[in-house]
Length: 102
Image 1 (cartoon, rainbow, N blue to C red):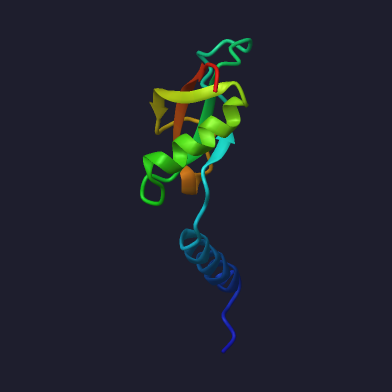
Image 2 (cartoon, rainbow, N blue to C red):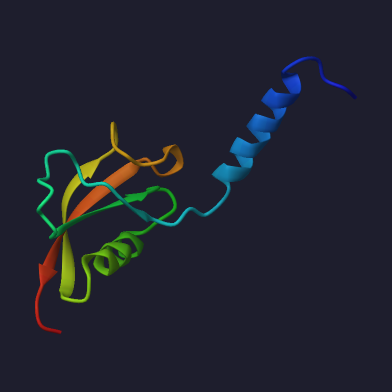
């Protein structure tokens, strides 16, 4: 059955969105909030989907982003709107990296 005009594109786009929504998108690094000065290297930000990830998953990614000197991370700020995260992982959480001796 042949669909008229741009209906094929609409159906294909909808199918892609449904497939993408079913994938497990891992938490990823993103830009820090604009209020954070560029020289603050002790703050990292992560995008994630609250429905798909636990606090431990997100903190593990943040700890890796902090580098080898970090022993733990502390949540500092959460943004759900107007951030640099993709639409399927729309929540951004920023962490303070706590340095120490391991």
